[in-house]
Image (cartoon, rainbow, N blue to C red; front, side):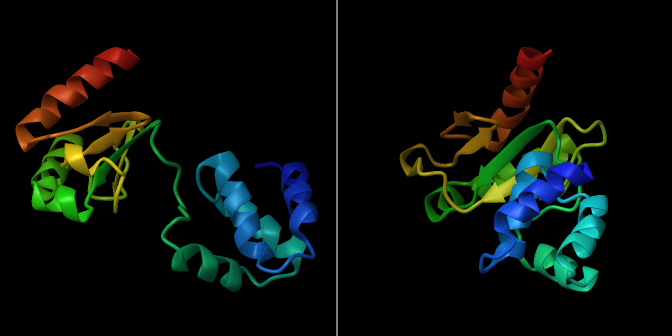
Length: 154
């Protein structure tokens, strides 16, 4: 993120309560994560200690310190999904993608995350890859879904 873009964001939120969180949201909205250089620039632009900036970033699970993958795989672990086998589905995606929750594949294509509910309880268990929802899954379905998804993006 360049300094001019960050200065514009800071100017928009400068005198508002909770501005650091809102500025970090805007940075992540543009970059997909909070880059280290942006945190250093914020320190200067806001006259806030770097430790305070990282305290906020690391306290809230929403903020990411590393660039996400090109595609996001979100496994729902809400009650309905969990009771219908979402943990098995998550385990299979971990195995297939070779990452843990919150991790990104070595090729930068996929980030694996969990969410608490996607609002499709009748389709439990559910995953969302980018904006596409898959429901009534079993662990055995994961390889086929991932293969079809990869084929569709190539």
